Length: 253
Image 1 (spheres, rainbow, N blue to C red):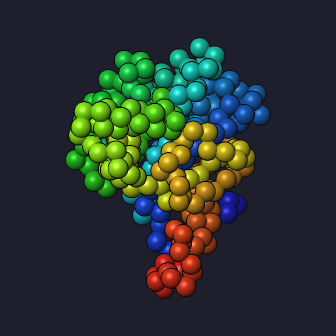
Image 2: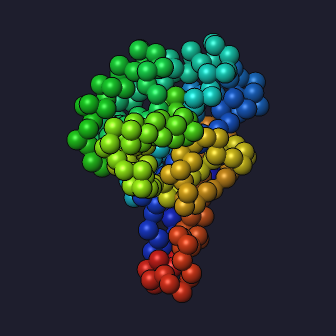
């Protein structure tokens, strides 16, 4: 008999925005004697369940690390398979995402993404732009350092053109030039598979995020695992540089 999934803590305000580094697909497959791409396929299917769980538990936004700027170093057949898989998953579950009023957004360098993936993504971003129930952000061909370099170039160009005074280069000016402009910072970052690093994922945006590391491989990260992460998040005090005594009672969990 399976153990029921734990519910989020009572009186807990869920994170508004969760970022997930979905790791361990290949190792999950290897442990079961399956091809690496089968691990990625199972992991892609798992994402749909996690989206449903996020919506049900009051989360407003989920950013998933789908393909990093460094993933191009992987074998060519695996890279090609990942893009084909992503396109298939999008088409297979499009009606389900639309039914739940999910808005799709993509961050990363889309110019390097194959057209057979880029076109469907652009179509869904356009068709779902008025959906307000939930936002799914796909980090595709994304790297936080690359994002920061592009923002620095934009700032330098604005300063050189006289549109921005050097002394006005502050965090809001930087934030407005990031690919995540207009998005709330993640409250919670989850990394699966037992690795303890951020791997160039939302480095600036995660400055005050709570981080939960789990040893579970991504294809096994189900609703119960998400709720365990939410329960861990509920234990954290988010002080943002203040002392505990400065916080209003509502902020103390």
